[in-house]
Length: 283
Image 1 (cartoon, rainbow, N blue to C red):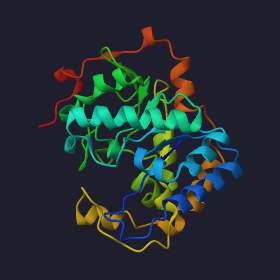
Image 2: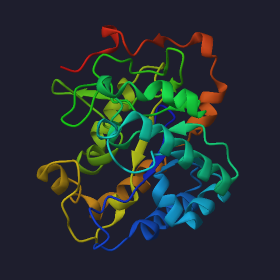
Image 3: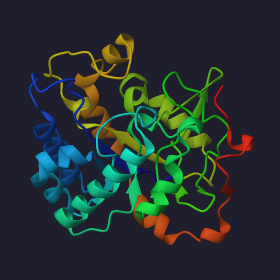
């Protein structure tokens, strides 16, 4: 790899009901085993209610040197939440993670990159709750959630936190988040290598994955908050995910997002007003 890439993991439980087997702890520990074997220090964003059910896996991750961040209290897109409920649950989940791990929880990632112009109300709440950075914006148009027009490099929200936008590259006229998720599972490594070569030196590159993406034995179910096609895609490519990620991680080494944020000179970052059309307004 030509550039360093931070590894991030989103730990979540996507089951639509408790009638389905909870495989989240087992698969999270499987990914932690891979990280330990390969000497990877990751930034791990965990959903708060899942951490309460399985605190031992978060304690293990913290003890093995990973940075712990919050992936919201529940894995629900921000636009489906009331701001006052989000703030209350966010602060409670942050406090629980800090008490459980002994770490200060500095990072937040919105479920499904759902920090958009329509959910910009969440930005001052992040500052009020004591976070120092967010990793929640996809700076492009997207079938699910995107904030087209926001910078593709780290910036600071006006009177709020640092934002590490999801890395994107242009493929056949479309800007895609090539370093994680379905794009990682389904696209050949050539696309990732091309995107990394194209990346500006101003960008902070990070890959993202989910424990369920490594679970080739999980039975299919319809996911909440997304369409049937997106649900089906979530099961494609799981059988090859571990080998793909292992091959990728062999050439990957970078600081956690929290360490990068701490080392930044805030005065050198572009300040973006989320209320401004320059930041990109969803139609």
